[in-house]
Length: 506
Ligand SMILES: [Zn+2]
Image: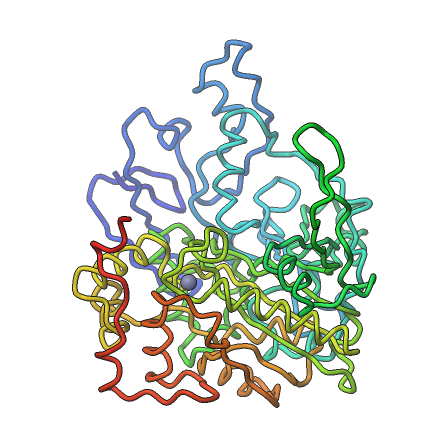
């Protein structure tokens, strides 16, 4: 069945979706596959109106049928997409790279009645968690019109504006004002009742890690009472106070940053056209975001991908102070190693080594920064990663086949594309890196290319490398990753072998 975007009339002939990046209504015929009794048929769908969810569903226990609840939740006709010249569409001004936050304007992607016609961003807040929000609303646990109370949520640590925030080429992958929304756009939120949400949150915490306890016990970390503190005594099972060594805890400031892509800037960073970027994003998200195609006037997209987290050791104000030494690790998520200690790679040992270096740097009068990106398995995802593990182990796990195995399964060696990664460094005001704790040539090149010089690089000390992960490290060094000492040739790689499949099960 076909639904005409302008008239809402049902067509009987199939017309493929032929989106054009113009205002032309030739792009307005949209295929809708649905059973006859679907809500798209009743009431009759029209794409020329913007009628978002407004109702609050009755609790399921009251006895309303799901059909009734659906109509209360979403009384308007199904609104598959919008167009720039559509009646009432007036995006709130958003000038990426403007001189200050107020003139830059808020990012608005809400479909609530109060905001939908003024939306200036495609997608939804909270990345992939937007799906859980949808579930909560469908189940009646959350009102779609719930208005968050952001009082008392402001950052307890200052991440102040930097010149880079007003440079549309320096930060393109998140909103640099995302943590200041509550105060910066209070008038728009309270008086204009626009649904504007923070995309960054800043807070403080203590870290407690067994590796740091052990380092402090050996005297490799100093308890200074400011950054590293002695942990309070632990309790025994009977509730009495234990006399055993209780270890240390580390004070950090941290920020969670959701992706908010300025599409022209992202396209430029990757050297492709904005039109091609939009089409690729539309197609390979299963057509989830048709406005990528129909709204070329909207330049901002909130992609359904994981966020990044910044951990700051020492005084955050030192990050933008060029007289202070800065230690940095940019770490891409590896759940198997980082959390569960899987020994096939060096991710966790490298991360904990970097945290210790950051702490020591801060204790020596500098500042340490660890940025944790949710790019599991080189952004290929954990399923692909495990498939590659299986292939490696079945084929005889030697370093010369390390990258080839990934390429066979995924088609590429790596999907992390570090070009967007340096944005966070510019956001923090970092102007040079004294100590980079990373062997990755891709990360190094991306940071330097973005205009931030790196003075020293550090590879993982040999004694921290688990035997089974020697395959990964040697393959990376041979492929051009930084190494302070070891040189590895292609011939050497054949000799570096990991645990066999049979040896895993004991
Ligand atoms: Zn790993």
